[in-house]
Length: 236
Image (cartoon, rainbow, N blue to C red):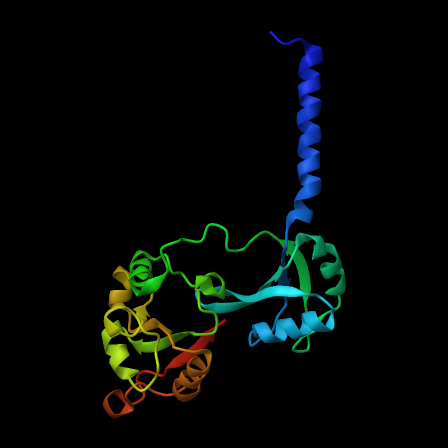
């Protein structure tokens, strides 16, 4: 049986280790979360603000909730050694006329599901609700090439949308099919009037062309008139 003196030594050792881990943890982080961005802000806008503030960044990702921008972004630094100086330099930074607020962050991609690569993996993930559109870049890969389309008929299938988008260069996939995944698949979506689809284009420029030509137009107006107004947005 341990004596009171030995017990106190062990407790002191554990408390000291806890204090040390809390003191070291902030310095081990190399991510910064930025709040207060305009909803229209792009990664390039955040990069320009960082360049002006003399902050060298490795990557920038816009944060999303259900593929809608949350007015936050995650900045990845090359090393945790630059964390404190970067936070200091970003103190009065401005993006799109709005002052931003920066805080240290853990890796925002921690715990992301693995089975979201390739057309089969993304389709299976959508079926199971794994692709939620949450987190940096909406939890997706190929930043800037993904387009989310909403306002489409509720019963529209991915195959039907591929046919509708045959005039656009979509990402190639197995069997020569183009990559389109229906989102929010489930019991309630089967009863919904409209649907959302994730479209992965062949390039960033093609993603922008798709958005320019289809956003705020109507889906097959010769058939449905003004019943289905479309929304299209690039996910960064």
